[in-house]
Amino acid sequence: MLHADAMGDTPHLLLVDDERSIREPLAQYLTRQGFRVTQAADAESARPRLTAYAIDLAIIDIMMPGEDGLSLCRHIAATSDTPVILLTAKAEETDRIVGLEMGADDYVVKPFSPRELATRVKVVLRRANAGGTRQHAPESGSYAFAGWLLRSGERVLVDRGGVSVPLSTGEYNLLLALITRPRQVLTRDQLLDLTQGREAAAFDRAIDNQVSRLRRKIEADPKSPEIIKTVWGGGYTLAAEVTRL
Image (cartoon, rainbow, N blue to C red):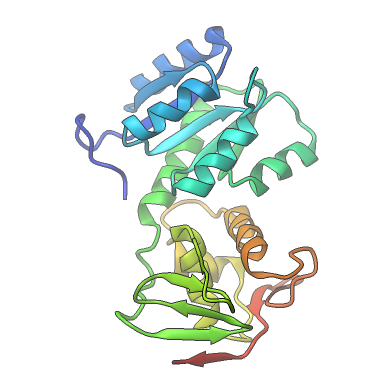
């Protein structure tokens, strides 16, 4: 859900860009579009703002002096469920893929129109607002699979050694959808329905991003996954036996 802050239900954005000539006019435009905007000129000044405010979405320029936008994006993805849109001056596909793998929810290539960015912000916020409402875990119960144990009531994932592995809300919802339907091929559309709702436009790469992040946590070799497998032209499937405890 969107945070409720001192400004009521107005979505609060954090805009991080070292180019003042871009950052300030963009902040003014987004404010006119009905958003509350907090600005930061670099990652160092952005970090305390992330904890000081209830930020609903972060817009981050990749190329900044000091800590770059990808590093800040990785930090946000690892510590919160705050959606991230990256701004990049590079149009190469590899740069966009790296950003998504770092945990970004979307990207916009410079130069872009403020209207385009505002539209993407609204789409990502609608999706975040609908997140986790389509599927409800049982109040208690555990699922054992491939050496892992998911305690759904506590939302805790435990490895063979009894060590808990932290999961974001998105990762938890995705894993729950898969383990409650083992060996069933789930399309990206189905996974969006189960984990995030379809109140926003189709956003298949959001699922791919979550799968990539989840694989890095549970697969012995994320590049050759044995637990969450890709079904080309279909979607994803949990290729392991699941035991409900």
